Length: 306
Figure 1 (spheres, rainbow, N blue to C red):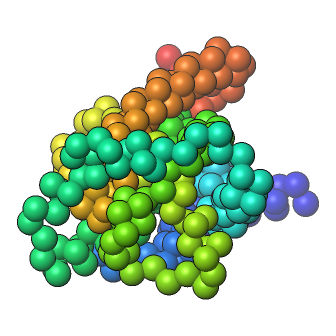
Figure 2: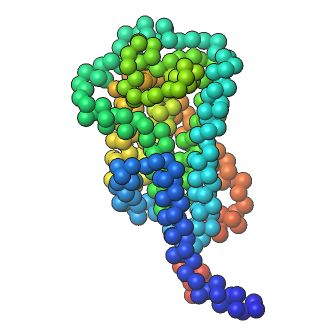
């Protein structure tokens, strides 16, 4: 019985199964996020030079950690949006904002970023709306999915921690203390995103949390981490895309210039904190586990040959 089981295990192509499961998870991530064809094209461009950043770890060994981790991220992606809006509604209903900055921000020259719309056309409006609507999660998911195909659990954790995992809890105190509404609402202009709100409460919940800009902080964190990669296609694509997300927040009259600056500073701090968390974790994880994951391809054959 034991021999039959061992023979069955050896005769199956587990690496191929792992690749198929991986593709399925990535597809499900896109389905949950409602990705358009443009989103998939952007992801494929970022994957073009993935081999330049791959870690020298066997696929089978990586899948043991990588697939469950990607599955956990996928699960929280599907449930996290509801949790976020529950928190936002709780903050609005309890009205715990000791500071209201609408008038202050509106009084600062050029802070409304009207200069960002000095050139505007319908086609550019549409492009900026697409970039903004997907930018909050797509910039992070592109980096996580790509780091998955580099076979690096550490990179997956680095992007995830620098993104939503650390930013959500750390940014909530700002949103709970500071009431700052979106530029268009404060200035009495049309909502360029064309959002429809069922109630006045829904509208106010959507426009009240501006400082710092989390669209900016997420995308800027991904930009900083992308610059650490070797593949220039990925680096230049992500720098362009993430910079466009930041620009879209001002072009669409959503965030104030100071929101954006604060978001970039916040992102830098979170990236450094994520680096520290991973460093401490690497000191705690037993050396046997690290060696098991870190063995290079051909390691066992080299040891036998010696």
